[in-house]
Amino acid sequence: MNFFLETIKVLLLSIWYNVESFIYLLVPMKKKNIAGEVVLITGAGSGIGRLMAQEFAAHSPVLVLWDINLEGMKETARLAKCNGASRVHYYICDCSDKNEVYRVADQVKREVGDVSILVNNAGIVTGKKFMDAPDSLIEKTMEVNIMAHFWTYKAFLPAMIANNHGHLVSIASSAGLIGVNGLADYCASKFAAVGFAESVGLELLASGKDGVKTTIVCPYFINTGMFDGCQTKWPRLLPILSPEYVAKKIIHAVLTDQIYLLLPKSMYLIAALKNVLPMKQAVLLGQYLGAFNLMDTFRGRSKKQE
Image (tube, rainbow, N blue to C red; front, side):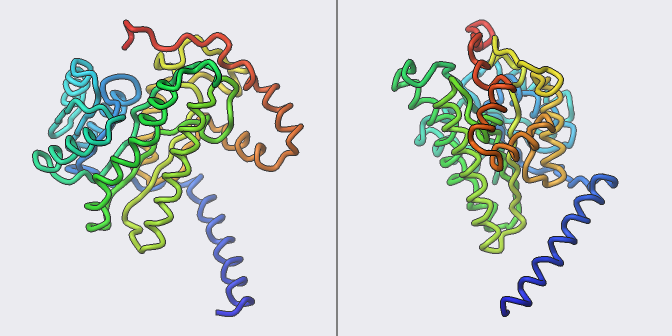
């Protein structure tokens, strides 16, 4: 195809895709049926992981829960069964350990079957400035927040590719789009999670495996205890998010094959401005939004909450 014809094709398709997006603002997208699908959620013992399990359960899938907290998973399993999950299986798995991920993944495939919806949700935060963070905690952050995604993809993606059917869900963060003072290692891990999910999604499209979908979730701070103590400067513009609200939005995004989910909606504008504003103006905007002081009062999750 020559340059002129290909340019015309891109322009016409661009117009159509924008019209299509506008239509979907007015007409809700059809939700896919996930009854009987095998849904695996990491970090399912509490917080967003537990709430996502409950939300997924209402759609009658087979749930597989991973966490290092056995009692937490048992409670999640109980709640999920009450919400309609056809079957619930739970396994202790330290996602920071590659060998353990592969071992437990093999066990899941033997005992439950091929996973068709993979939700990489497990995450940790040190809450320390870069030079104050011990090497061991930095390594642990990277192992849990991003390296685990590599190993779970390696374990479960082959079956999705073979069937040209599946869904990869990455619970990243707005800190994976915009750097935050006091969150260097966490931001690095979440930027990596976003980039990794985007790249694998493109690999799948390029190889014709368009039946394997990707959803990348980038929320602002969620009121789960993980970021206890953090305060938002302008609550109306950037509120601390309700975990129940976030869980519902994530499941809706999965059911409608939404690729990017940024929460709250103001994050779409803020992320776009970061990439087009002059650097000095972007820094000024960051100061205005409180990005320089978000972590000043950080306490994090208490042992009791864990």
